[in-house]
Amino acid sequence: FDKPEELRAQARNKAINDAKQKAMVLAGDLGVSLGKLQSFNEGYAGSPIAPMMMRSEAGATKDGAVALPIPSGEQEVTVQVTLTYEVR
Image (cartoon, rainbow, N blue to C red; front, side, top):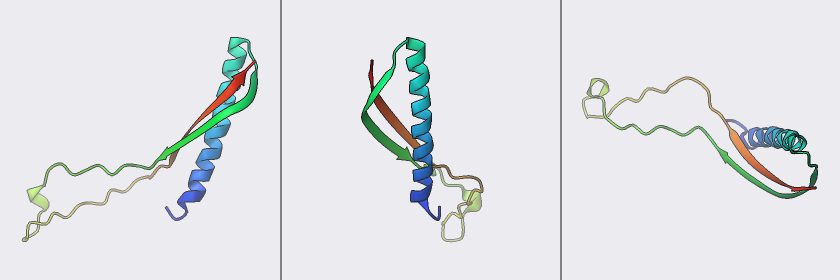
């Protein structure tokens, strides 16, 4: 990622908005209303790199080094938030 902090900020904003929406729907389903925000917690994770568990002899060089393929694909930034509201 060129600008990981910008991506985390965008993901955080989306996660906060999604959590607010879910809280409002749940409050409506329960017949209560949301009060003040009591707490906020955040956590994030990137795409983990899977460890290579076994060495492939087919791809080994003369000195025993293994050329690892670089997979193409996507990287993902995930932000998880927990919002705790006062219930009225």
